[in-house]
Image (cartoon, rainbow, N blue to C red; front, side):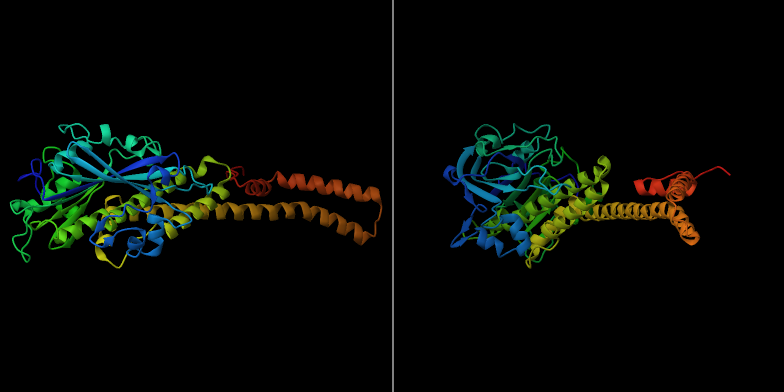
Length: 439
């Protein structure tokens, strides 16, 4: 992949959609009286309606519960809107609650959520993406004025600042573009032919929200990007990067009734949901990493490590999936997102570090148990010896018994001043004692 050839800066596709994902903080549960309804935005195609029931059948049950909630524990709401500004047409808004847990087994901030804005675009798409990405020579941010997210959320939520654990430098974008017959750089010459190199350059520009002058790409990076490219079919491909994803058609769009009706529907629903699940995984991994860094901030190490292990187990059973569905493209998109953010490697590091802390706790507990047994031995041996001597002698004198007890206490105190005694006391406290260098 090189940085030469045509760009998309002046190209308007036959069909263009844009989805923007923003981290937000919920102020209250979305209210049906304000136009909010439970479930994801229900796009339609003919008689097909992509509501919660339809999408849940596409994913494994555990993943569906994370993405759509349950009737008694909803986590996703949508609102139908119609706002137009500078060639962008907002048709709907979603909120997905993404609260995470900490080592105290409670939500650090139960108000964490993602806002999802759905647009259609009738101006060149790349300049819009560059402006959202705040490229140096781009135009003003289109998410302003009537499309300001805080205005659209209407006090239900607000965009989170960029200083927290889950801070994003810019919104995550998912672009979908299909070419017309004259957009030959993106077209496959025939269904059996290889794609021209310019098709992948277009795909890269959409996903990276950049023109060649913003971020020149060297040919040596092509294998790296190939790992994040999903060839859905001969008709279209997807590329997933850290701050954006893109879907690009490879044959001319025939308009209404074309296959791309179905493609656009999937890009805005189940394929988007696969990327949202990847975002949830990344956020929870960030939270677990933060917890690991705070393990030694409290003296109650055992309790913190136990709670951390619980949270890791809860994360793995609830969120950590690399296989979502029997349908291939969604799995490929999730794996590409995980690859971009190194999520499998980070999970392995978390598990290894948590295992180290668990072994440390077990070692400390073993030391404390050994220390307790040592104290019992040091206390019991002199006292038991003194009482046994008196019993053998048949001495039942109270003064002699008190003398024996006193001598036992003195012997115990003397024993605790020895190197062994200090080790026993240190083990009982859960600490360590430096070796005795005296000879």
